[in-house]
Length: 434
Image (cartoon, rainbow, N blue to C red; front, side):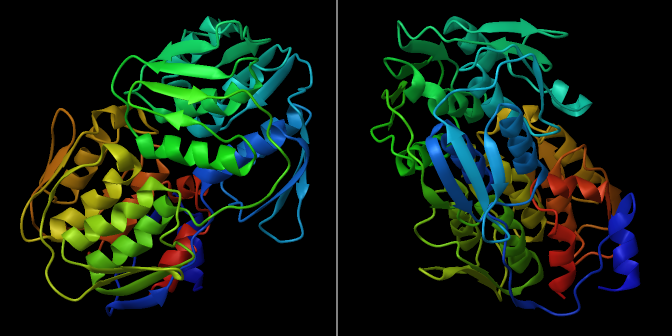
C-alpha cells in the first residue's frame, strides 16, 4: 500500500483511484455477518462449547460478542485467526442490571433484545445515536405481548430500551408485521425453541426478505433445532434446545456483491472463492441479476465468477428478497445502455440510512439520473462525474459509491471508516484490485 493510500484510508474522505485496465483477480470476502450473528446466538443458548470458523471482524460481530460476554456467555478465540469459541449456558443469562452496548449494529441490537427477554434482567440495550433513530417497535411490541417487561428509555420502539424476562410461553404465539424488517422475526425465531411450547409467529402483513428467514432456519437446524417452518402467514418454531456445534460461516454474499459488481462496472473478471452454489444466503443470487444485465456468471463448488466484456443492459427488478443490495445495483445501473427500475423495497428507507432517498440524492450529485419512487428507484443510463458522496452512517452506501470511482475520476467517499461495520478491510481490497 502506498503512503497516499494509507493516508486516504485514515482521512475523513477517501478518494478512489480509477483502474487503468479491466479486472482479472480473485477476492476473498469476510464471513457472513448475517450467518455469524445467528450462529452466535444459537451457540450462546446451547449447553456446552461451540467453535465457529469464518467469523468476520466487523463492528456488528464485535458488538454481538461484547453483549454475549456481558450476559455471562464465555467467548474466546479459537485455533484459527477467524475462529471464535463460545461456551454456551443453556439459556441461563447473567442477572442485571446490565447495559448491553450494540454500537451501530441494527442486527445485533434486535437479536440481543430478543435474547435478553430470556433472562431475569433488567438489561438496557442501547447503541450510538444513529442507531437510536432506527425503528424497533414491532419487536418491542411482540416481546411485551409474550410477557417480557419492556420499558422505553426515551420513546417507545427505539433504543435505549430496558428488557427483563421471563417470557410467558403459555400461548406459544405472537403476531407481528412481516413487511418492515425480517430481523424482528429472526430475533423471535432464535429464542422460540426456549419457550415451553415453541413459538408460532403470525404475520399480519406480507413477508419481506424471506430469504433471511431461510438463513435463520438453516442455522438453527445446524445447531440441532430442526423443523422450523417459514410460510406466507406463519413462522412455526418447535420447542427444543440447541446443541454445541463446530460451525463454519460461509463467505458473505452481500460483501461479495461489491467486487463482483466491480467486474460489471469496470469490465474484466472477478472470482470470489468459497461463495458456492450451496450458499444459504439469498443475496448470493445477485450474480444472476448481473447475468441478466449482460455479464457472464459461473457459480460452482469452488466459488462465484463474474465477467463482463460487452455492453450492459438495464433491467426491471423486484429486490424485496435482496434489499441490502439495492445500492450495489444502483451504481451498476448508470453504465447500462437502457434504464433500470428497482421495485419492492420501500421499507429500506428505515435501514442505517434512508437507502432510497439518501442513495438517490448522492447519485444525482455525481451526475447519475436517479429518481426515487414510492417503492424503489429508476436510474437512467449516463456516465457519472466526480463528486464528494456522503455515506449517512451507512456502510453499504460507502462500499457501493466506491465502485463508481473505479471508472470515474474524482469520486470521494465521506466517512470511509463506516465500512468497519461489516468489512474493515474493504479499502485495502479496493486498492488491490488495480
